[in-house]
Image (cartoon, rainbow, N blue to C red; front, side, top):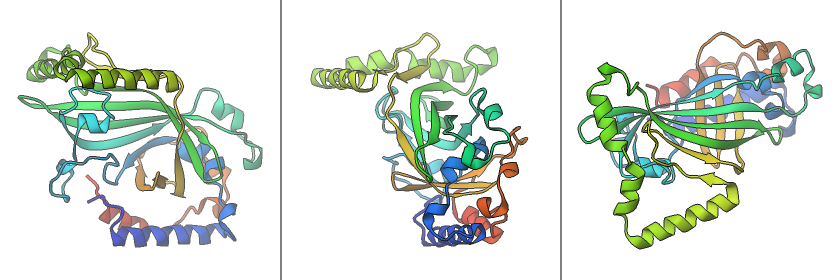
Length: 301
């Protein structure tokens, strides 16, 4: 069901991490520096196979993906409207791409010679929105960058995010989906603002003003194309701690929440990460039994 607190998952993860450390021939925790050397391993597309990490999950059975429901407001910290729209999370895809010129600069260098790197970090949350008349396929995309800040910690900064349909509103065959999307999102921000009590409006205005001064927040506005986008000029740094990493899986901790991601198969990048690591450094052939056990227990669609 995607719950990484399940005892079976916890045990499998511990076994996996210990086995990887043994393969790398670690003598102490400080010897493993995945964040410094994961430039090559990090690139690509990853699919989260754990339950969505958002707070405020709505009550319901825990054994089915379709029950991973949240309100749009809770998922987006009140950024996107209408905030009470029910969302079903289908998938979370993380895409990490090289920044132009970075790969060429580092190709052929030894790990000790590689300076701090940075890459794009894009999180796509594929949603089904429960509209007034039909279910609307949507996508919430957060754009940012990632970079190492310690041997096992990667910093992340998000600078903008967009809520948009997963279908072309202009296509004639969009039919009922286009009209339903328009009904739900046409002037949605203005309508919700006007419907709220005056004191709530003042509170939101003050909060947005503070965030504008602190981080340069530009909150979403009603757009002609019926999308909503926020921008942050001076984003604050978040981070994730790398718990385990190999060619197929990445296990990380985000403020205490464990996230397990599986690499989406595709053509290898020009800077193939295996070429830059010896076997002890990358623990390349980890016990597959543990990986399969995690995948069987964790929610996988």
